[in-house]
Image (cartoon, rainbow, N blue to C red; front, side):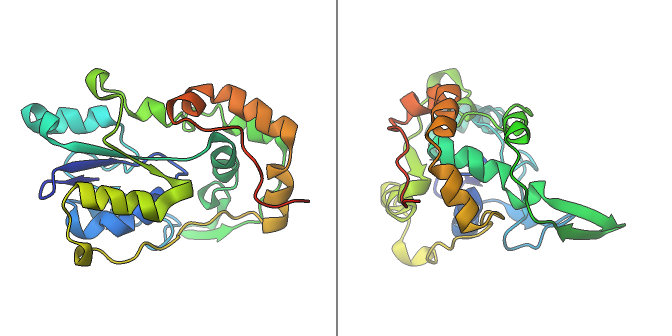
Length: 219
């Protein structure tokens, strides 16, 4: 997303609470929401702008569009600890919608399959958060919005960008995982799975100073 009024770019990394942030920032951005296929406009939706129709555009797309004024824009990026982010991607509702008849979509119950999980992380769409900052001289964002500290980080960004408090509504949590809490908790308690994902995503562990994941709940 891009705001010409407040001179900022929001780089939406998949599975980092980005849809919630999109809805939060929409009133002050030069973007529109659109729906297609199984989108409901609330949890699943696309975001288009003059620069692109892809809401997950990397920073280089914004640089190409803005040209000489690009350096005057602040950069926000949404990030998340790699382990819960990887599980969130596997269980993302968009991966479990099936077209039952032309134009009719149904959300099917997700099934855990570890082989399919690893395949999903190598499908080309699940990239490191760091890779979205693909402009050589802007590989560090001005504001990092952590999914784990969403409200406070957004508040800090709003203050830093001089956006009046009454301009935006409270943030809402949308596009929740399609997995049950029981299944997610069980997987989040898997030390071996955690270690493998953290090794695979070492770039983000280091870039955003994430410690090894500690489950919030015990089995």
